Length: 281
Image (tube, rainbow, N blue to C red; front, side, top):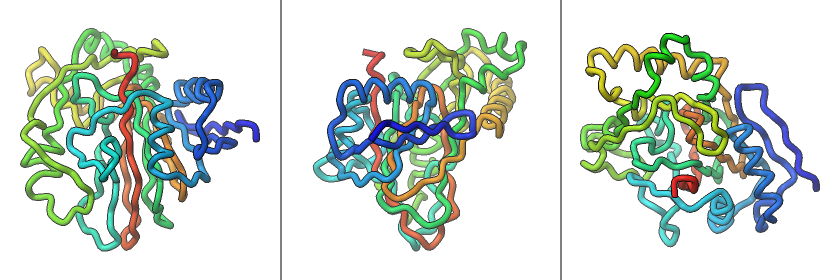
């Protein structure tokens, strides 16, 4: 069956059909998928029926396994975490804030691979926002202000003791482990040049960016608020709808994403792998 690509009517995203991910991919197929991923930023593969081993094998075609500093892995698979929510769970939806996965690390991951094992009949869409487009659309004076500046990234809002998933986050089924390590900070360029495409993306997010290096917090806060509103404008956003057995991969270097709810009373289970950026050595 030939590879069939359906670009989505949005700023990013494409559906990929014609591949059986139960089987190892040929080098030519991997090269074609990588080119499509760099072009569309978010790829979705519907109609798969995958084991954890299959998901791991696919992720390794993209790059080496990354780290997940605040997730507990599933037994026997140290690089696989579950994104889960039980039907009767009442905790806040996980990852509702816009973010790029683990941007607070010194070497943030290139990709995230997520597979839908149990998908509710309604709700649970994932939002993706194209940050190439967000950077390109910034006013010239704001681009000039941000040129050469670095954002201050930290996991504290989510994973510190007093964070959203900290000591007070009771009753959550997902295996999140808060830590004082979340208080650390890391600098990254706000105008980040993608190491494979050479394009510039806006690299901040309300989930993990807490300041701008060299600018006082009281002065940086309104700039960041403006950027956070701008980067999630509707024209940059792709709303992805899940289906049972769908695998999705996205490029954390040029998109941000956010989870949505709307599936109360239904169980939801996905398996997740972080893929390191092989260009960072």
